[in-house]
Every structure is written in C-alpha cells, then in structure tokens.
Length: 259
Ligand SMILES: NC(=O)c1ccc[n+]([C@@H]2O[C@H](COP(=O)([O-])OP(=O)(O)OC[C@H]3O[C@@H](n4cnc5c(N)ncnc54)[C@H](OP(=O)(O)O)[C@@H]3O)[C@@H](O)[C@H]2O)c1
Image (cartoon, rainbow, N blue to C red):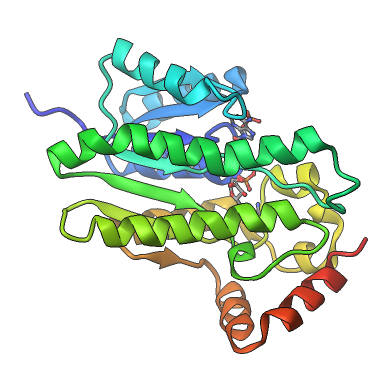
C-alpha cells in the first residue's frame, strides 16, 4: 500500500493558509490543519474530505506558546502521521510604534512568525531527509525587503523568514526536497483588520485574493522555485526597492504607514 503525501499547514483556519490547504488537498495530499480556531478548522476539514476525498486532521494549537511545537509533534507521532510538506503560514502583524504596541503582542509575533516556524521546520525536517521527499513552503511577505517603521517587528520577522528559507534551500540543494518562500503583498484575509493595515491606502488599493496568492505559492512550491512573489504590482515594488538605498525605502514605508 502506498501512503498518501501529507501536508501540514499552520494558520489553516483563515485567509492564505485556508486556501493553501485546499490547494494541497486538490493536488492529492492529505492535510493536517493547525491553528487556534477549532471550529473553523473542523469546518474546513469536512469540506476538504467531502470535496477532494483526502484525509484532513485537525490539531488545535496556539503557536505563540513555547511548548506548542513539541506538543504538536507529539500529536503527529501519536496519530502515526508523517509530514512530507510543511507549510509555515501562521503569522500576524500589528501596525503602530514599537514603544506603543504591547510587549506581549510583539513578542508573541516573534514566537509565531519566527520561533514556531523555525522549531517546526527543525523537528519535521529529519523524516523528510530520510525519505528524500517533500519540503518546506514558508510564507513570508514583501515586507521582507525593507525595514518597516510603524510595524518594525513584523517587517523584521519577515526578513528572517526570507533569509532562513534561502539559507535552508542552499543547504538542501543536494537533496530532492523543495524549499520555497511565498512572499505575498496585500491580500484579502483576516490580516488587514487584525493588524490595522487594512485602513491604509497602500494596503487597500492593491489587494489580491487569498486564493490567487495560495495558487501561486502552491504552483511555485511544486516547481521548487526559490521565491514566489504573486502579482506584478508586488514584483514591481520589490524590484524598485532593490534599486533604492535602504534609508530611502524605510523613510518611504514609514511615511505610508503613519496613520
Ligand atoms: N494578508 C496579507 O496582506 C499578507 C501579506 C503578506 C504576508 N502575509 C502573511 O500570510 C500569512 C497568513 O496570513 P493571512 O493573510 O492569511 O491572515 P489571516 O487570515 O489573519 O490568517 C492568519 C492565520 O494564522 C493563524 N494564527 C495567528 N496567530 C496564531 C497563533 N498564535 N497560533 C496558531 N495560529 C495562529 C490564524 O489562526 P487562528 O486565529 O485560528 O489561530 C490564521 O489561520 C501570515 O504569515 C502573514 O504574515 C499576509
């Protein structure tokens, strides 16, 4: 009996993660859905099982908790689940000055966007290497390419995601594993309202759908592309930023993000 490929998607309860879970299920993968909102995950699991006939397992976790990744891995072992593809998508942001935003929210952001992503990758990579198949799709942001005044921690976490993914990709270049960083720009999801960015002109005037972003990410991962930036406007923004000195891009972003 051949075992189905299994993709674990963090932040699968909403937005881009939800759509990525659907893409992977549509592509013939069983899925493990991880986030805090159990009801939303169960609803998605039912939809995936009836629409695509793939197994969908729900694991509820708060990834800002330091013990959450090890608990998640214990649950995978307990359920005899081997993960082939890890999609590190869970993440959030917060618009505001570093000194004014709460310390807890900003350190939780580092825990979810950086620490959980790193630990989960480290915990799940050995079995991928052993089987020499599968890989990692990390969800970063076009925020990775410059500093972000009035959202300094979020931009820094996404710079980490890009740098980590590129470094890991190079380390694994002699294997069959795929390693891809999906770098969305403004996207219709819960992120805009939750972070406060949704009210900014720079955000609301250029949004893409979560489905289109997820489709580009899934296809790029399947082709083992290193970086996927969905949408020509986002690609233009990143390319232009590359021509400007960092002091200029951060001043520009600071101006656009001043409420
Ligand atoms: N939307 C954009 O404009 C945009 C642009 C660039 C990059 N991104 C990135 O895309 C990724 C997905 O965001 P989205 O746009 O789809 O936003 P979203 O609709 O708000 O989804 C965020 C997901 O992350 C999960 N999550 C948040 N905190 C968590 C925690 N403590 N533990 C476990 N799961 C947690 C949420 O689930 P629960 O609340 O159920 O836990 C939800 O499923 C993020 O990494 C974000 O930084 C988004």
